[in-house]
Image (cartoon, rainbow, N blue to C red):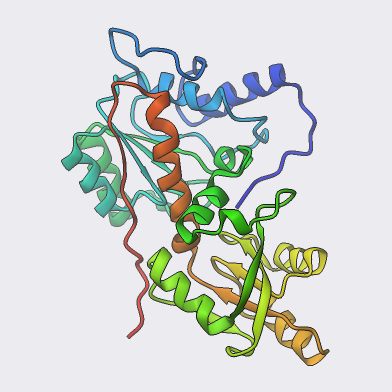
Length: 303
């Protein structure tokens, strides 16, 4: 989900902070080229690719998680892979494609800020780190920035996959006005178009609704409930939720007489379309480089 920056920093301050954030992750400062600049004869480095992307992003928060997580950003890029999360399977696929820059939306090392101090000596962490290092891959996270694009790149990708762009409100594309549809029909649509095998629901599956809110990822219960209250949508679609927060709020809302429901479609399913969208957004900005989206296979399944 988006990370909002209310600091009001100037763009000059942002550039300094962005370079500092990358340096803190073991990355030298980046150079920021303009979009559409022709690829240098010597080839683009990972740092230059990152700079080209960030040149079109508004101000990132000072404590952004959008930093290099592995590899040497000074190496020349042979190909780019975008993905929701760089699992070992995704890394294998990137290697097979001949790509050495992986742009992931979610963490590489199992926690939001990719802290690894608690993983020292862990065999799983060591296996993944060696997989990245032995194949010379650079991993950069693009989480805060893609949500700060206007329109939000993740929401844009979800709307495209659902075929809902014409239904999205111009003032807030996360809110969609649809022809009457049941909760059960919505769940079937998400399974078909977003490829999710699991949808959890709170609400009457046969009750018709018209307004649907897309709150992708895992924004947290307070943000989800505030969104419901402020927008008045009848169905809130989220990636994931804490079962004792938003789901109970929606159950009590129904008891009070409000037509409210929530669908939890899985974190990956709710944001993967955004990283697919990013691949298309990148191609004209990185002429001469092959950009491929590699979807993540959901780790969770129903028995």
